[in-house]
Length: 297
Image (cartoon, rainbow, N blue to C red; front, side, top):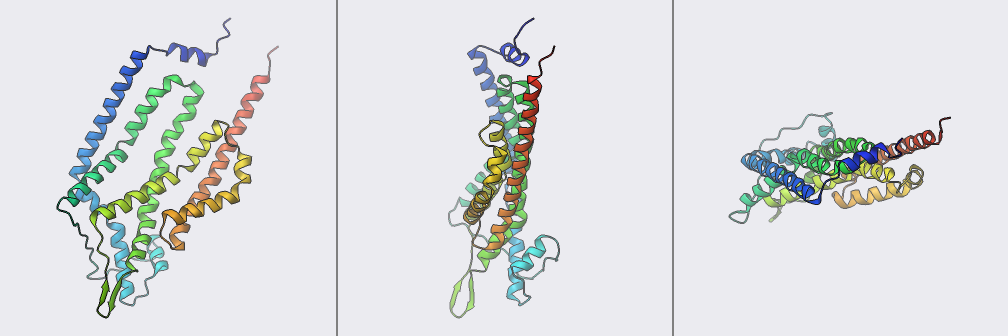
């Protein structure tokens, strides 16, 4: 009877010459590039509509700020009530948005950047699958089963972070920006006239920052699977992690406590979820080790 482990035998059977690996890599790169090109053309065709969709948080903030100017008492807590659906968005006539661009082709290049960003987001499932399909033959069967959930969890967590930015954080950021204006104070007027490129940079930066922060359970769970962290260490360092989370939230959000808290609380909850995931992995690993120690008679 052979002593070769079935997983080792499967990997050995999947071995191929270097040239075959390079040919497969080229084919998968071609698929990735083709997907990005198709996604780019599709997003560029609808770039104006996508940009207008990204302006919705600014529209909400502008309506709240205009209501405040009219003496309706619309402040940050009123904005929070509107965002969670506990209060209707006030409709104020004349609260129109005005964006500018100062270079002839600035808006065109902004559309190109928007199409590129949208193409990567749109084609991420294709890109992730091509990467997984290329490295999967070199993984053990149990490693492939463990890796697949992360292919689903990573984009879902990123979309959750992006949704938090779009529906909660951006309106607070933009309301705070509008509140810094000086209007109606004699002959001095300081009015916000955002550039189309600067607004896109703000949106994409916040989307990436929050989306990556929401990958915390994926990163910590992978580290736990590799044996680099333990649930006991994560639990013992909880208070330091909470301080670190609020520091990160203070860096990537505007200087108001509401938006910082809106980022910090979900990340702290995700940290707790990470501890549970690592603990479940350790429990499963102990069960497997105990099973290997049972020697049949």
